[in-house]
Image 1 (cartoon, rainbow, N blue to C red):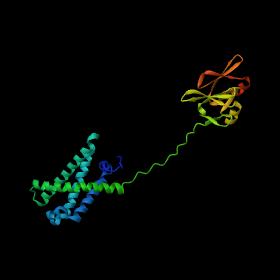
Image 2: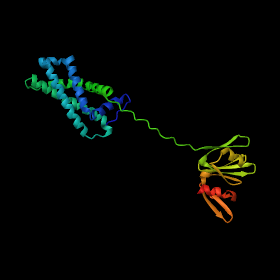
Image 3: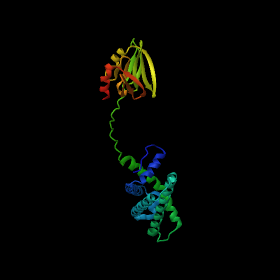
Image 4: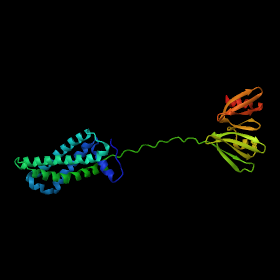
Length: 282
C-alpha cells in the first residue's frame, strides 16, 4: 500500500500518483467515469451535442466506458514497467499524456464510425484529443480529491503502549557535619568511604574514572544518614558499597575484599565484620 504524504503542495501530486497505483484503483476509474458522464449530460461542453444530435447521451456513455477501459488497461501496464525513482514524476506526467491521447483517439474513432460514415480525418483526431486534454486531467484530480479526502478510510491510530519506567539510579547525598550538601553520587558509582581523621574520603566513579572527595564528617554519621542496604562496614575505617563487592580473600590472619571497579586495590576487613561480609558475598 503506498504511503500518503499529508504535506501540502507537491505532496498532492505525489499522493495522486500513489493513489493511481493502489489496489482499489478500480474505484478511481469507476468514479471518474461517472463524473465525466454527469458532466457531459449536464453541461454539453464544446458543442458536442451538435456532433451527435439525438444520440448524444448514448455517445457520451459509450465514450466514458471506452475511457474507463483505456484507463484500466493503462493502469495495468503502468504497474508493470519499472521506473527509477529519480525519473518517477516525469514518467508519471508522460504516462498521463499517453493515456489522454489514447482516449482522444478512441473518441475520434467513435465519432468517425457513428457520424462520419467511416471517413477518418486528422482534424477529427486533433479535436477529440484537445477535448480529452481539457477535461480528463481536471476530472482525474477532482476524482482523487473526492475519494481520498472524503471516502478514503483514515488509518486507525495505534493504541499507545505503556512502557515500564526504568528505575533510575538512587542518588546518595553526602553532607558535612553542618548538614551542608557536599557531594551527590549515583548509587552504582559509589565505591567506598574511608575515615581520615576528622574527614571522610568518598571514593566514587565519574565517567569511569575513580575520584576522591574529602568531607568533614564521620563514618558513623554517614552510615546513619545513608541507611542500611547500601553500605556495609568492613573495617572501623571503611564503609563499602554492597553492590560493588566482588571477592573475599584471606592471607594468614589478614582478610581483604575486592571491588568490581577496583580489582587491584584490596580493602582490609576486620575480624569483627568477616561474617557479615561473607553473608553478602554468599
